Amino acid sequence: MSLRHIEKFIEIYKKDPVGVAFCPYRVCPIGAHSDHQHGKITGLAIDKGIHLAYKPKQNGVVEICSLQFDKRAQWHISCVPEFKQNDWADYLRGATLELSSRHSLHVGLSGVIEGTLPIGGLSSSAAVTLVFLSALCKVNDIKLTDLEMIEIAVAVENRYVGVSCGKLDQSCEIFSRKDQLLYLDTLDDKYELIPTSPSMKPYEIAIFFSGVERTLAGSKFNMRVDECRSAAYALKAYAGMEYGKFSETNLREVPVEVYHQYKDRLPENWAKRAEHWYTEYERVQKGAEAWRKGDIETFGRLSFESGHSSIYNWETGSPELKTLYELMTQTDGIYGGRFSGAGFKGCCMALIDPSYRESIERKIEEGYLHAFPELRGKYQFVICKSADGIL
Image 1 (spheres, rainbow, N blue to C red):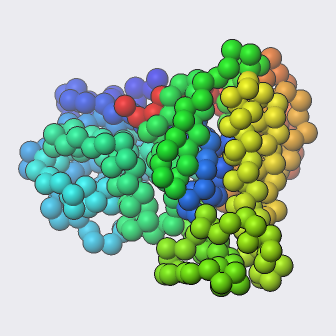
Image 2: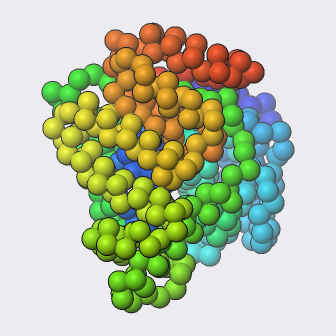
């Protein structure tokens, strides 16, 4: 574990932190781009994430710096900017606002944040929100349930930051447990932790970082969500189903039989988004059963299919991530994988056979840097293990 956040805290404040919080990143092998339509997902927390060394500030000031960003952020718990400031600390400001709307806050905190992997694709925004939220609750003696933590963190993304995401990331980072696959229905939050079968072949989680960390893709993400809602709205109308507010409409409310009956009437883009959602819903169910049986080959194949659908039906994936995905499908020892996160930046994840680790690392790096030589020194390969969610 890196100790840079603790060292930096001592350097700034000349004393040890009172507390250190940690939230893991997550991977979603199957179930991507579906939670905002109340789909089902699979997920694993990994043993890398966001650390926060902190101490309480009785004057109510929040003072935070990050080892990944230059700008220090500061605000008072009772005077948070009403609108986002368009910097890395917006998630923390939003968390302060959302928590203060539910509980009385009296104590601020000073802290140093450290992310242990590059930004993009592993839900770092959810992790930084949750790790800060846990620390702010701790210094104010507030105890939230898991579902309250998830609800607040999702509200930060939706209302303050302006991203129309669902609860996949936050749920994975809270509910996950080491060596168990999270199988979650985002409609009602019912979930199962499926143990890794003793009969399952050995696996590791490989992360391939593209070297591309920042893009202006938030609007594209929100557009995909709106296209799903549009498809659901139109399908309901064609089928004579009742429908209400557009913002509250989702594909989970539309039976798959209705989709198949009327999909040819949908505009091409709406039909593609719906095709991804309905097929992903089926893949998640099949994947959960494969994991239960210890069949990692089938689970991996379904993860590859998920990645293919994300590229061709959901139509996301930067050129860099598409290249990594194609290389993964052509490499021995990779059970399956896909790009991780929204697909506009960041990384691909894969479940791999540990005995092939070195050859996988070599082949992917050679192929990727041949295609994108300018990313040499930025591309990274990292091996992770599954881990417990935030405790």
